[in-house]
Structure formats: structure tokens, C-alpha cells
View 1 (cartoon, rainbow, N blue to C red):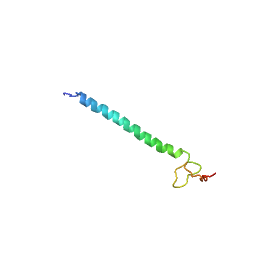
View 2 (view 1 turned 60 degrees about the vertical axis):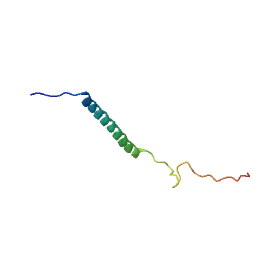
View 3 (view 1 turned 90 degrees about the vertical axis):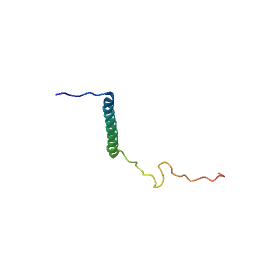
View 4 (view 1 turned 90 degrees about the horizontal axis):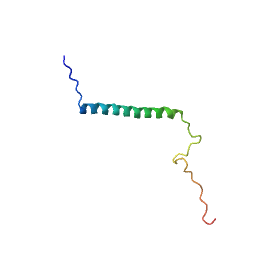
Length: 67
């Protein structure tokens, strides 16, 4: 029985790209999954900001210009 198991440069390159791409995809999926898990254990702010304004943008009353 004859086995034809020749891998040229193009085939080797394709295999390397598949391995690297699979590893990168698995790393991104793990990172996103970990952020979801970690978000469940994060502390929430003790005092929520007012609706409609981002945190830290509270308005202060203006002083009259003559004072």
C-alpha cells in the first residue's frame, strides 16, 4: 500500500494559520467569558448617579459675577 503524505509549504502554512487562529479565537472567547463572570462579583457604586447625567458631572449653583 502506498502512502502519499507529502506536505508542501502551502499546506504547512495553512495548518499553522489554523492553529494560530484557533488559539487567538479561544483566547478572545475566554476573555469575554471571564469578564462576564467577574462582572457578577464586582461591587456596585454605593450611590447611583442621577438619571440622565454621567457620574461626576453634578451641577453647582453659579455665583453672581459681582461677588
